[in-house]
Each structure stands twice: as C-alpha cells, then as structure tokens.
Image 1 (cartoon, rainbow, N blue to C red):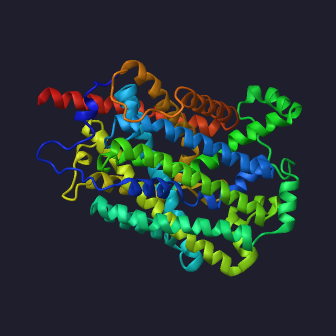
Image 2 (cartoon, rainbow, N blue to C red; image 1 turned 30 degrees about the vertical axis):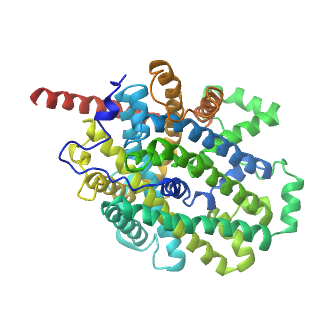
Image 3 (tube, rainbow, N blue to C red; image 1 turned 135 degrees about the vertical axis):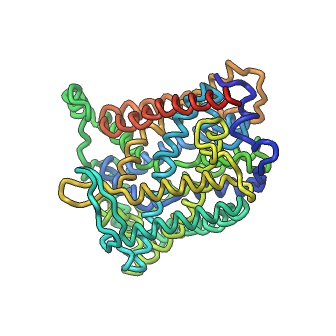
Amino acid sequence: MADASSAKTTGTVADKGEHQFVKAIGLYDATMIVVGSMIGSGIFIVAADIARQTGSAGGLLLTWILSGCLTIAAALSYGELAAMFPHAGGQYVYLREAFSPMWGFLYGWTLFLVIQTGTIAAVAIGFARYLGVLFPAISPKTWIIPPINFSSKFAISLSVQQLVGVLMIIFLTYLNTRGVKLGKWIQNIFTSAKMLSLLGLILICVFVARNALAIADNFSHLWAIRGAQTIEPGVGFLGGVLRTLTAASGWYGLLIALAVAQVGSLFSADAWNNIGFTAAEVKNPKRDVALSMAFGTVIVITLYCLANLAYLCALPLAQIQNAPDDRVATAALSAVFGAKGAWMMAIAIIISTFGCNNGLILAGSRVAYAMAKDGLFFRATGKLNEKGVPGVALAYQGAWIVILILLRTRKPDGSYGNLYSNLLEYVVFAALLFYALTIAGIFVLRVRRPDAERPYKAFGYPVLPLLYIVAAGGIMVVLLLYETQTAGMGMVIVLLGLPVYWLWARLKRARQATE
C-alpha cells in the first residue's frame, strides 16, 4: 500500500517554487464538467443498437434504467474517496491509495492510451461527421492524404473529416492551456446549451412528433421480442450449454441481452468520474467533488431515460432498430420536420460534442500530471504552466489523440475503419473492472485507515457499493462469455501496462539513487 501521506506529497500539488493550481471551480462549474463530459453523441445514436440487442421496447428502457442505477450507485460511492483524496488525478489516486501505485498506474496507463484519448478521438470525428451534414465538403471520402497501408491490418490517412477532427483537438487543447477559468467558462456555456438541446429533443418527440401508432406498438407489446439480433457465445467450449440455456428460458436470453447492451449505454453515460481528476482546482473539493458527481449523474441519467422514452413515443421499435446510420434522434426529428430535422439534430450534436470534448480534454491531462508527480510518467507532464494548468500534459494528450485519429484499420472488403473505435470496444470491460476495483477500495480503506478523515461517507454503505460490485461483476462475466474477443483484448491492453510500470518504477528508483 502507498504511504499514507503520499497523496499529500505526490501527484497533487506543485513543488515549492513551481506554479500552483488555480482553485476556480465551484459546485455549479463542477456539475457542468460532469454533465458536459457525460453527454456526447452516444445518447443520439446507441439506442438503435440497444434496441436490436434486446429486441423489445421494454428491453431498451430497462437497459438505460439499469445503466442509470449502476452509474448513480458508483457516483454515490466514489464520493467517499473523492472527499478523502481531493487531489489532481482522481481515480488514479484512489487506486494508488487503496491498493498500490501499480494499480493506479495500470488505470492511468489505460486511461491515457485508450479510455480518455480514444473517447476524445471518437467525439472529435463525431463532431466532424455532423458538421459535414451542414457542410458536405467535410467528407470522410475527400482525401488530403489517401490511405497509406503500412501493414495488412493498419493504414494512415488524412481526409477532410479527419482534418476537422484534428483541428478541433488542437483548438480545444490550446484553449485549455490558457487556464482553468477559460476552460470552465467554455464548459458552462456548451453544457447549458446541450442540456437545453436534449430537453428540446425530448419535448418535441413527446408533444410534436408524438405518434399514436408508435405508442400503441411499443407500449402495448412492451416485452414482445421483435427484430432481435442473435448474441452468440464467444467461448467455444461453453457454446452449446449457453445456447441451451437461452432456448430454455426467455428471461435468461433477456438478461444476457441486457448485460451485453450495457456496453453502449454505460459508455454513453461514462466520464462522470472526470471531475475527480480536477479536484485540486475545485474551491471546496471535500464537499463539491462528491456533490457534483451525484448531481451530474442524476441530471444526465434522468435526461437519458426521458430521451429513450421520447424515442418510443415518436418511432415504432422497428424504425428505431433500423434508423439510417443508427441516428435515432435524427429519424425522430425528420419524421416531423423532414430534411430540416437532420439539420436541427446536426447542430445539437455539434454543440454537444464540442462541449463534451472540452471537458474530457480539460480533465484527462490531470491524470498524466499526477502520474508524473509520482515519477511514473514523463517528467515534463508533471509541471504546471504560468496559467496553473499542466500545459505539457495537455500537449502530450493532444498529440496522442491526433495519432489515434490518423491511424486506420483495414477491413477485408478493402474499406477502412478507425483504430480508436476498435480500442474503445476493447476497453469497456477494463473500464468496468477499474470502476468495480475502485469501489472495492472503499472497503479496503475502511479497514486499513479506519480513523482517516471522511467528510462524506459512501451512501448506503456497505449494501449499495457491494451491489454495484456484484452487478458489475455479473456484466463482466457475461462480456467474457459472449464478447470474449473484445473483453480479452481489453485485458491485454491493461496487462501491457505492467512492463511499462516496472520500467518507470526502475527509472524512478535510479533517479532517487542519484539525487
């Protein structure tokens, strides 16, 4: 276990003579960071895939309700750790203090390599894709640099769409090097706008695009399975047993579908923990980090559930399942406004993705900073610039995101995919594992540090945190059985961090020996 005082001496504050973090984030600002980081483009798209996986209107709603319960339970539990360790780095620090620096590093490694940066890359391309609805010249097929194949599976390219995504990353990274006050100002404006946009979508679907036939079809046959895709086991030697269970019990099949569908809904509701990364810049971190997590997750989950209810009021299940390019929200607005509906939705998603990436870029760099202060990342990323933000960490993060945007995967049919999309599919399992492990850290620290100051204690302890761990564990088991390849690759990415950790730890010991 890390030394009890390590959180006060490493990864949290600048050394004497260095620039200091600026405490400029209040409770409202912190809540806007939570909400803004959570709401991207997923809520407007993933309902189609979830509807196909569950095959029913009830399954679609239940998936989001379960994701909401898990997310809120996690946020209420994380509050205890956030109040105990109100330092830059958030979950990295929690894992370091509860278990060891190695576990903190494995999380930080996975976050920097894929979770945070891959999400930002995906959101940046989403921004460019919807900007292309307004300006058709922004196309994924208009090449500045055509794909250059450098192996049988990978290539690199630069399309106009990729260029717009790259420029977005550079612009937001630069803005965030100018200080947290500017970053929070941008976040507050765009998060308020996207909340109003999502609320407007809900109201339009319920009151303007309301479809009596869709309502009758969806709610009169709430649990009727229609158009469901087959979810095949990924573990070959258990395939026969699992198929027999599915055939024997419709409820077993529904449970499996709900667990697999959590990949989309949980990913869309992710990033609620990002405010913990910026805790050193919160004015009253022992109170406001925990409160903002709770307030932000409740706001977002409420909007998400209402949005899916609104989709079911506007579109029959079959239209949700088969929405063009999975753009369910666009299909709902187009049913009322025609071509103008696509424009309206594009503008809403452009605002949403811009604000989402601002929050993710702002927060993610603080983890690299905390790792560097512990001697486990590039030393330059552990410095604050004259504006009191980790400028070098922001630059490193931005550079890696640009690389992820430029790298492509080669498909058997000769087309190209995006490397970050594959990586994000792989790490959903790993992200869930780290969440469960972090909440388990509450139990560990209650035993190891019973007298530590706890300004906030986990709501419903020990029942609620334990229920989260059990539920998350169940979902992980299903993913291992049915999404074996992607879950397995996620674990490979995490485990690749072990030799990197040992290298950094060795370099740290060598530096300490010479100082």
